[in-house]
Length: 317
View 1: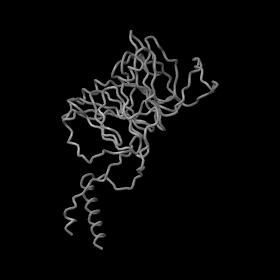
View 2: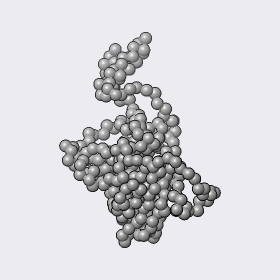
View 3: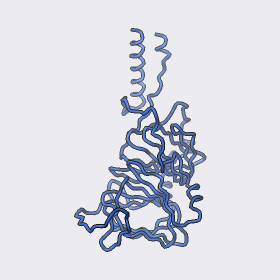
């Protein structure tokens, strides 16, 4: 009887504390595997851009897949000056890029062509033809993201590349191209976004760059000095249905990643947290720090540990 009473008091205390902290919180049982999913190639907890550049230092044209899971695919792509993609589009998916080095001329149907350089983020909706060309006298480097297993189509007047195991068939596609809606824009410039954050009282904020039913991409900007201290027991949160990953846009970000040693990620690095894996990212250093958070759901569920409660009063019962 005493055990039952203690449990009931503890549970009610816990509920009242949680409600007091966040009226939107609810308690639920969530699955958590006894063994973490782990990392299957090409995934790594921490992909360093410096390592990729060292690996390909003798080449101007190279590609490195960084994420290829059930939801998203990302590739770092370096292209020599003068390199141009054929005109192409994706029938059902949005594609986007973070330009990391060099200059790329984007020609997107329905938009005036523009040249993007470091810090520009560009996107193209489904069924919207586009081309990219590296301009200037140095290679371009871009971080490309698309939905997993996205297919590429080519307009009738464009010759498709050879594709092992497939023939190319001329088809009729009656649907119209996608549009830039829900806050999506053809491009944004990081320096302009950062300047707006710096005008805020705490010089921090978030900006949703990609807002799609099948993927989101949020800019998260701020300073370590504005954060409260980390509690030793705080593991952050995890996601039950999708991995999450980040490309660091500026400064450094620290990560407490379940099952891994602490990570300090630099600009250009990518950090990957498989589903069911607790993660706690934080701004790091003197700042400013910024990460682009990417996952497969517009309002992904954040699953937190239940916070410990004071038990001294209960222990006296």
